[in-house]
Length: 224
Image (cartoon, one colour):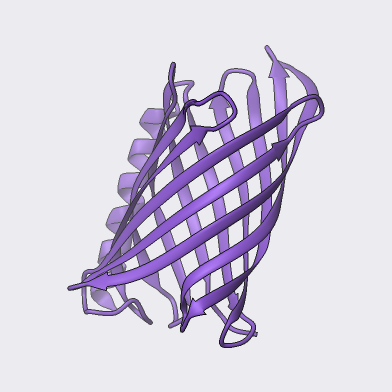
């Protein structure tokens, strides 16, 4: 436990230092994220995530994204297929003047596969999205690959300290072009066997811009 306290204090110091430097720029943000994965039965699960994003980028102040879906495991606790919906609100700016918020509604389908190799926990996810705006419709595909490695044991459970990273690429299907790529690296701690806290830094690259986001994430895997 003493090891974790020292590690966590050092981590907070690093984040605060980097955040102070980044505050001088105008192309960064802070994302607060909750991921829920609740087991309903041996086959059915409920997944949800809620994200509040504070952005320091041109014409955008903040964004709220709510997402929820019901999934079915094709095998025991793996090979999950899911159908979900999402709702997003983006607060816009014209200089310093607020503009009407942009509303987005989504329907999405996904396939998720988990595996373990040595001490690495690996997750693959493919997601298709149908995006509905006030005056437009979009279609997007996403491929997500994540790695998590315990640093003080072999499992992701209570008191685990672990390294985490992922990469996710987005493709605009309607216009047949690259949309964006997100790369993240961070560190996490197992509060219990079912709840983890994680913080890290994400770099989002689009065709004409790249920006960074600090992330604070809560994972909740408690069953009903």
